[in-house]
Length: 475
Image 1 (tube, helix red, strand yellow):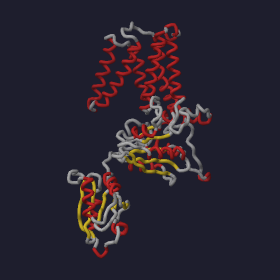
Image 2: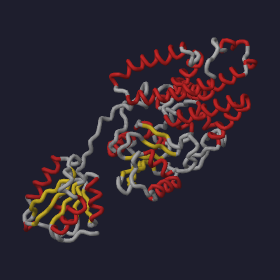
Image 3: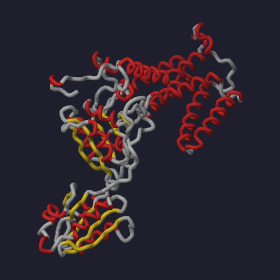
Image 4: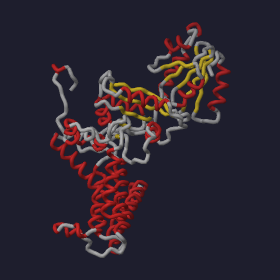
């Protein structure tokens, strides 16, 4: 449906669509410009008031003899603003308006003038709570898309950096930005992602990036290992773009979705590169070993407790000091679920009560649960290590994937003893080995297929690449 040259008719159409008399935040202002009646629509709270004031002053100063014959000429002469567009479609104008842009209709013009003087409520770009670093920049993504793209632009001042805007959701019209480097990105993967976003038929991306991720990669939902890497750090996103990856930013989400991502990409952290190579290598290897321990520690201990003959003499101290009143497998499973319960409780606990309640929970659930006979002290110790060690890497998705695999290995070990343990290890290995990134490549590259130089880069923190001015490359 297109606009007509009659302003009253256009306003009547918009009244039926926008219901401005009912929606208090949809504001319209009629005035005279160049001897013609005009109407300015905007959403209260999403528009810069000082900019509107100056624009209205300019509009009101236009004389009838100076009025251009069409909207294009009017925008050229009397719209002293940087971001201006024209549209003759009513539905397009309504979408623009509800995203926060101001829309100007003038009697006699068949086009609407779109003025992008919007502003969104936003918090400061402070360091994210999850992706903290010991050294490095302290800024982080926020819920406003344009701020996030600016944080990446600030780090990559190269004309080859491309940021394409797309929308998804029939009701939400959520803005999605694809960030990549021309000449470095996998063009076939890029076109695939664009095609999947264009083909989305959803009402709204209610859960932001998670909704988008499930829509563009719906396959193998039963495999818990993450297909995407999420980061709230703009330096991490910028480094990924320079490596040829695609970064997807979704409006209202304070994190970047990086793809394609292998398991080694997900394990990496910014601290690996903010320290010298030897320190970064130690941090990276420590994180890998600790992640492996969180998967295997309790299943191996359960296997040894079920088969005391397997315990070597130098490990005799790991035997139970007291007779268990509850089978060990049930102790471990109860603690697995109890820890998640405590984690959810901590999220919903007011910040002023977090510390005292944590102390009370630690005393009651730690000491008295052992004294009551529900748990053995050894079980509490190993589960405490697993819980704390799970936070050694930043990815929630990878942490829960390891947790699910650990629970499966525990159950199979309890049911089938040694053969169950081997079956659980084999199942976990297959979940990783036969997994694929969104680009269809190996999830554990460069191990499969094996590439020695890339293996060294994944396991060892080497010196950052650099070139001199005479090399003609980028430093």
